[in-house]
Length: 212
Image 1 (cartoon, rainbow, N blue to C red):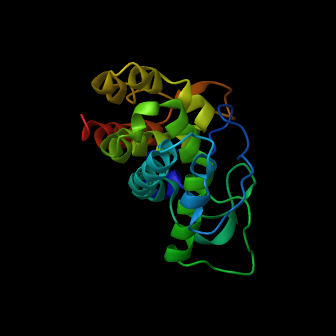
Image 2: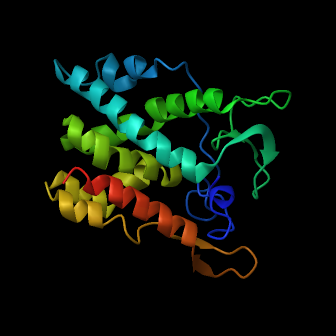
């Protein structure tokens, strides 16, 4: 979780920011070969595009995993996050096991599976230019990490995605700065800018710009 990865930066875990994206979305953890089993790769995209989509999902997830690991933080044992939700590994809230302590490697498998099945396919679908693998490794990875934080729907409606759909890759990368960086402080009711979210967006921006 981000508050553990960067203690001085945020008082709330970045994967479930209160009053922005609500409770963690229920997901089903699948085996690591989920890229081949992802909805887009099963034929929802016609013809040869299915192979392009599968390759883009693989590339985007590979780029997003290090960011998500850094900002979510590793916890092998189950713990309660600040919202009181049982959590394990890198922000996992389903298929957790209180009797087990997962290794970093096991948690990485869970994270990669979750990103590949739940988060990357809608991002690739809403930004068609990401079927270019170079873009998927950079802009796609940044968007997938942002979607693990904010949700795919919010990312697909974001200024980054709008710029990318219009072919404005530089502008889209720059738009990560300042996007989705506030939350409501439950103590005061005021919206506050979270340093952890600001820093996470800057990491995503830098990754994105590598492909411009």
